[in-house]
Length: 176
Image (cartoon, rainbow, N blue to C red; front, side, top):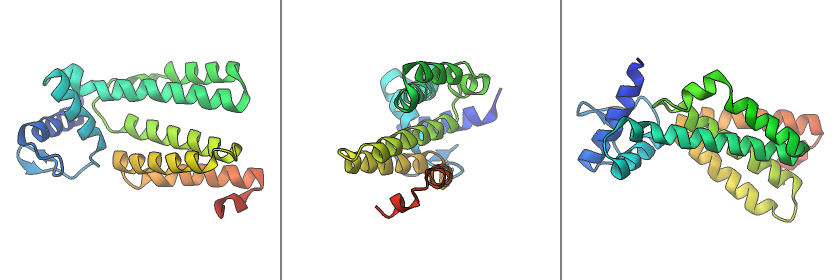
């Protein structure tokens, strides 16, 4: 039903067939409408499972499941297992989230890496012993978020973290 799904699946298919994993194409023409991460993931799924609808949608399903798991872990870390379970369950049963987790679109990729980045930031913020490792992983997750959807992969976490640090009265943490 969604024309974008076909475009993104075709772009990933052409990536595999041409062996060009750098320049995305659609019908043989350069196609730079979206960042490349989802196309890479779908192309890998095509290599593993063939050119099927299942393979095209697999990255979304895996990333959606991962997003639910990271949401559970973050909720658990903040306020215990009950909040973690409720957070994960609410996300997993949200209509829009279910739709995006089954579609060949880049949005769920962005959601996963932003959620992962925020989780890793929170771990780095709370745990001085492993701060450096968690913040390095946080920056890596931000990089993947940018590869998933562009600069919005930096803007959303930056605003969220900025408001959090303002609320906590710890803006000095940014310098650290």
